[in-house]
Amino acid sequence: MRLEIKDLHVFYGKIEAIKGISVTVNQGEIVTLIGANGAGKTTMLKTISGLRPVASGQILFDGQDISKVSAHDRVSLGISQAPEGRGIFPGMTVLENLEIGKYFRKERKNEMSEDLEKVYHLFPRLKERATQAGGTLSGGEQQMLAIGRALMARPKVLLLDEPSMGLAPMMIANIFRIITEINQSGTTILLVEQNAQQALQRAHRAYVLETGHVVKEAKASDLLNDPDVKAAYLGTGAAAAH
Amino acid sequence: MINIRDKGAELWETWNRPKRITFVLVLIGLVGLLPYAGDFSFTSILNTPISSYQAVLVYPVGMFVLMALGLNIVVGKSGLLDLGYVAFFAIGAYTAAILGTKTHLNIWEILPIGMGLAMISGVLLGLPTLRLRGDYLAIVTLGFGEIVRIVAVNNRSTGGPNGIANVPNPPSIFGVRFALDNMKGFFWIIFVMILLVIWMVRRLSIRRPGRAWEAIRQDEDVAMLMGVPILRYKIWSFSIGAAIGGAAGVIFASKSMYVAPDMFTFNTSVLILSCVVFGGMGNIWGVVLGGTILAYLPERIRFINNARQLVFGLALVVIMNVRPDGLLPRKKREKITKVSAKPEGDSNV
Ligand SMILES: Nc1ncnc2c1ncn2[C@@H]1O[C@H](COP(=O)(O)OP(=O)(O)OP(=O)(O)O)[C@@H](O)[C@H]1O
Ligand SMILES: [Mg+2]
Image (cartoon, chains in turn cyan, green):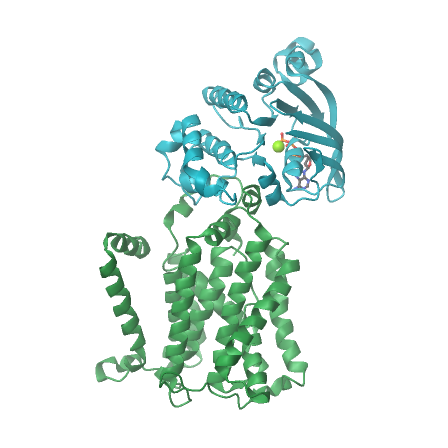
């Protein structure tokens, strides 16, 4: 698996949200995109998963340009996303939400129980709540469900859009621990985060986005000590800089 | 507020198979006997002034229920707001009228053709418009409904504003005669169609198409992220609904023996949609109940003449205030949730 985005441009109407971004994600990595509100992080993920059209540039998945491939076919290629705001189907139960995660896979019959077990193993809470309506879950449980549901499609690369959003510190730590666990069992991860501290600790490499551009690209551990990044995204540096 | 739907479902769950089959057969038998229900002195209250009770059972009651079930697949199941459903009804009716008067095909042979043409027009309309979101679809379908009627008014082959007369009745099947003086036959054929549609919808609902429609209705973007080919499933939903509207149209033309453009106005689209919303979007039994009441009631109170529409409208407003999700809403669990930031698909209806 290798995901290579080359000089990507994406528009909303006349507004250019992505102004020539290149990002590479290699097999086995956790790569994180960090940046302020409106930097274009969500737009990047939506474009990779096919919800937004590409204006120009390329999205290469294992060397093949998939920028014209429809969103649902990209899922079968191996790209899954847990979207911003979690996107749980509120009227479906937890189990139904998980099932629909692989509902359009050809081999779903053979894989279903095995993958449900895997997800329940990662998130035991979901097993307890299997028959509860998705919309009645707590924020943290919904995030678990969103990640679990994306895993049901057996993705080669998992796109996560701000999994820590709106969660209490304990739950954030828990979610990030599980993200590492998922990665260690072989799934490549592209992680979008506001919580730069946690993301940079977990990721191998990182890109810093500002208004549609990549302004920095480095090993995640290096960015943790980068004064600019500290000042802008890690909170701690902000006071010291003044 | 009591929830008859959940109570009913609970009771149904506790029954074993023979009990369920018996219940369904008895119910089918009872509904099949409905045309005779007005024959006794103590049931004469059912009889409607102006049109005969048996005629009212066919049109509007049976027709409305059939069409409401068809529209429910589009609006209730997959959340696509179709404001021009009458177009497919009209296409079915004109197919029957033209082929019935110009060729030797009988109505049973025309029925699949009418359904097919309605379905094809559904696909042709759907391909460009189902890519659009919510409100656009409503406007385009509304326009389509009007275009079909206006074409019928202005076209010689459709008889212009006068329409087409002498549409033949269907030939008898199984000894059942279909004629103006035997409305029972039409009622039974519509009843059979209603049963087929209910059976089909129930099967689809628990299978892949039903799951896909459900996902599309709740959140289109996320449905795509789950690998649902949303355009394909929307077109399926739209064209299945269209085919049912077309079938209703064929039977309607052959029952009335006459079609004219003013039978297919925007009003009808709105009325059918009202049946769906009033009965309970997405729930078959709600839709059946909604269709029955909204079709029967105005006929029953025809004696109050001018005040009829007013009384009908008031009753609708009052009931929708008391039961905003309809008489028999779909499963309650959907409504507990307003947690997610995105509005649910059915909020724009
Ligand atoms: N549907 C839309 N229509 C118009 N503009 C949009 C739309 N969605 C996003 N944008 C614009 O595109 C830019 C990038 O938005 P995006 O959602 O990708 O940012 P983000 O980095 O994910 O921000 P956040 O951290 O707040 O989620 C913003 O300027 C935003 O206003
Ligand atoms: Mg975002």
